[in-house]
Length: 273
Image (tube, rainbow, N blue to C red; front, top):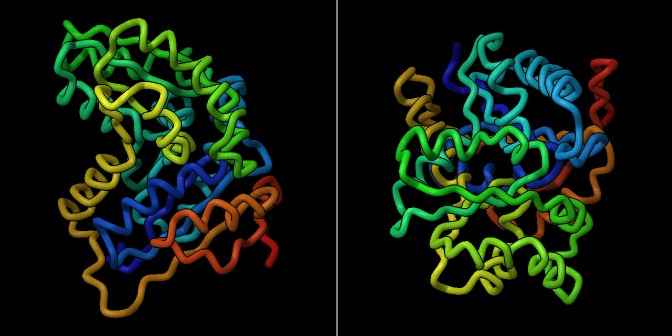
């Protein structure tokens, strides 16, 4: 395997671009292929077998494109399909659940941690399980926020509607007295200003994207697969459905230069320019 081979990253939509941003910070020379499964977003309400099928199709495509590692930049996939698909994959697969759980367990002061995520992620109890494996005494409170992903995909990141929805989801966590909140969906960082406003400055927000990128870096270094870089890295973006959200959200991430998004038809194994 060559060091110049790309890192594959995928999500149900554009939320995973928040992980790409952190990867670029820590690994500025890496070539990246990103897939946003916009034809099937959101993932949160889908049954496990469908998520496994979608994940396998995406990972197979990334491997065929020469990916030397795959980052599941999607908490729903990380909690439902990746535990099954990881052993089938010939390259390292990095998820976002384990890094996020580790960070939360390390920074909480009062041992009361909240998690906001999709319905599917909450249903698995993955964050509770991983946090308690590290520190059994921590109390974990998970809340599903199904309306957040559609708001982000539509580019609705502020205003009365977002604040009303955020209050509905977050007030129960405030009443639990948490001091740490895991942003357990890669779409949700776009809503951090509103989330922090509702939770108050005393609650620390944990974005798993940062630790995920660090774990990817450590994995590549350990295997001698990091790209030392002699040329400018190439970033390729694919969408299985609409690409409008890529350009809308991309404006908020100046670190990522999104000039072209290619339409990908995974079921047929082809892509359209």
